[in-house]
Amino acid sequence: MNFLIQYLKERRKLFLWFLFFCGIFLVAFLLYHLPAGAVCYPALVCSVCAMLGLILDYRKARKNHQKLLDIRALSAELAEEMLPEAATLKEEDYQELIRMLCQEQRELSDHMEQHYSDLVDYYTIWVHQIKTPIASMRLKLQNEDTPLSRTLRADLFRIEQYVEMVLTYLRLDSDTTDYVIREYDLDGIIRQAVRKYAGEFIDRKLELKYEALKTSVLSDEKWLTFVIEQVLSNALKYTRSGSIAIDLEKPKTLCIRDTGIGIAPEDLPRIFEKGYTGYNGRSDKKASGIGLYLCRRICKNLGHRITANASLGEGTVIRICLDRKKLETE
Image (cartoon, rainbow, N blue to C red; front, top):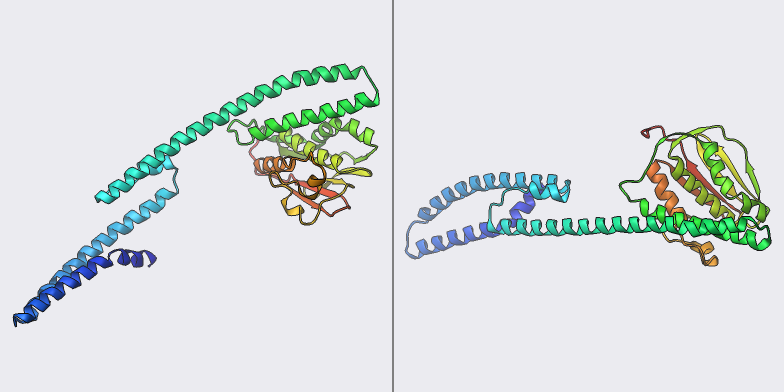
C-alpha cells in the first residue's frame, strides 16, 4: 500500500496534465457550440487506455522496486552487477553514478586493507625486535636480588604486557587470527596466567585464593589466557591489600574477585568501552582503557561473555561465561 501511494504521488503531474488538456478541449468545443459528448467520449476512451498502461507500468515499477530491495542486502560488488536494466536516460545516469561510487569504494577498501596489512606487519616486526632488549635486560637482572632489581623486573614485565597488548589490538580484526578452538583444561590456562604474576603477589603480600577447578572449556588457549591475564592485571593494579580469588560458578562461569577499590556505579556500564577509564582511570594517569575492551572483543570472538559487578570501595568481580557447546572444534 505504501508503494502504491508513493507511485501515484510520483505520477500525479501526468494526471493533472491529462485533465488540463481535456479541459482545454472541452472549453474549445463549448465556445464553438459543439456537443460536449464529442470531447467526453474520447476522453473516457483515453482514460481507460491510460489506466491499462498505468497498471502495466505499476507492475513493472513494483518489480524493479522489489529487485532493488533484494540488491540492497548484497555486497556492493554484487549489487553493481545485478542492477535492473535502465528504462530512461535518468535511470542510466543514476546507474552510472552508482558504478562510479562502487569503483571508488573498491579502491578505498583496497587501499585501507593494504594499509592495515602494512601496519600489522610493521608492528609484528617491532614487537619481535623490542623483545630482544627486554629479554637481555631480564637476564642481566636475574643475577641481582635487590629491591631495585625486583622493581625493574616488575617494570619490564609491564612493558612486555603493553607490547603484547599492541599486537593483540592489531590482530583482532585480522582475517588470519590464529584461533584454535578445542577442549582445554581450565586449570592449566589459569596456572599459566597466575605464574606470570607470582612475583607481584609475593611483593605486594596479596593472598591468592585458588583451588583446582577440575573442568575443561571449549575455547582457544592463547586468547583465553590473554583475557585472564588482563583481568588479573587489573585486579592487582587496583588491589592494595587483601586477596584475589579465582573460582567457578555454575554452569561454567569463571569468577575473578578482588578486594580492591572497586568501580563507581556510573562507570560500571562503560568499563568495556574502548578508551574509557572512568574514576579509577582518572586517578591512575597510566590507565589506557584498552585492556577490558580487548577482553570483551576477544570473548565475543570466542563465543564467551564477560561481565563485571562492583561497588566503589568494596572490590570487583569479573565473570567470564565459558559454557559454549556450539563452537566448532579443530
